[in-house]
Length: 305
Image (cartoon, rainbow, N blue to C red):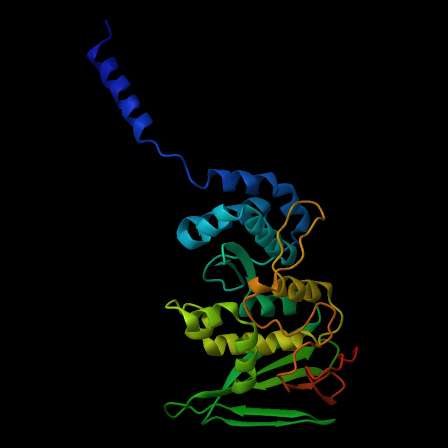
């Protein structure tokens, strides 16, 4: 006859068995682990290991119910987004603002954020410095093009600077020369209106959590940085980043890819992969390394520097 302590132990184990709930993310974790080798092959040497990438993604899934639901609904989209992050070596950890895994239309999509573009600019080896800023109504701002281009921005510091009115990026190239891109707020908004799925969905529904609603100026800065990247001398990492940020593809393993579903692209998809401009809505001024001004996004391919 079993002892009282043994009976108590048996009862406890039975209760634990009945109360045990399987981990809803167990299948996803298994899928991620199964492609750890592919993640390792894709990651550049930037201090992120495949195990760390998987841990970060699992943490994001546990913190974000909508993201977890999209991942369970379409596991292939999650694997694709993780592989995209691995290819450019960006960390999707919340708060770093390098890149994000975003639930969109039942799929997980990969978005590169402002800090991610800045990081890739430095990592390309082409940039000595890179900065993007917002211009406000009361700021002193002037931009002169020519052989001796000049940008002057003196922020208004005596109170409210007023509404934002434009955004610019200045990139100093190693070896000499600058890249300057300026867009007015109206020009940036035309890009937003045409390409941001989340923003346009927010206009029609109650959810207005797109960064275009919550951090419009930050998105404006990202837009001009992305524009400036088209004028940086040939750089595989930047070309890869632009390509991945503009397309959302389902990863099937190996080299097999589905055609891009452009409805999944968050925003700022104003260039195609090869560098030919496809948007007719922007007349952003660009100063290339040789000092000559040119119009960005007006149908001309950028000159090779």
